[in-house]
Image (tube, helix red, strand yellow):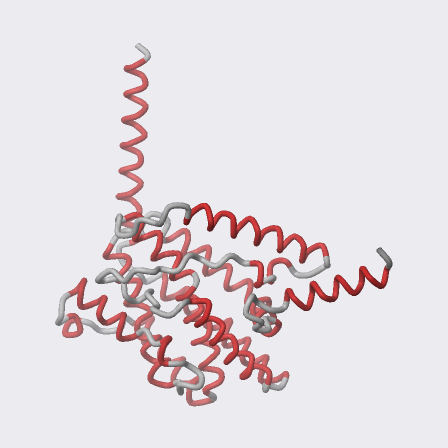
Length: 297
């Protein structure tokens, strides 16, 4: 193959890699993701460590929803539909979940905790300054609900035996992850930034059933469709910003992850749930060990 042919092929691959399967340009998404990668990763590490064994614990799950509920409610009250389509709205679904777990009168004894009030005060200032900067928060939060939110809910429902996956579904997910890894390596071979190769990242399996008390993460519309709609809105917004405004947008995106860390730290019941699951695991392993020792005597 000639040098020109190699160059042409590399350019074509790079161009394709900047778009997802539906042809949505991912260049701006990758730019913001790269600029927020450090704080984003820190948030992921804390969530994984804090909720390692607690996902199937109702108290932890619903308290986790409570700390973020006010944020979604704020976005839906303060962003126009052209920036936040109605089909993405989640506040009413959160409220139905709370009524299921805490009771129909849950709001009578509910008050946002101090960390949530601090977050809301910050959002008020951002909204007063520029709705585009408020959209920076909403974009990340709704994308999170359609990505990590699906994964967490799926694990929780499986742990509680609320959802049995169709035969072969897990194998398909593993295959998707293997193909994503291969695509990522191909991008790296072209000197691309593999950590930001979003087109290669596997889509978490969408929660496709709506159990009572599990509505917050349920979307009746296909998540790839909703994500692409939100990405197109983001592209339209971000493309019109000058460099100074883009820097502000990125800084607010970083602030989101910083403040989310503070909210996650306030979720109640995590240590209790983790210790209980750990104790069960220790008892189980000890029982196996004792049974094995008795068997070999």
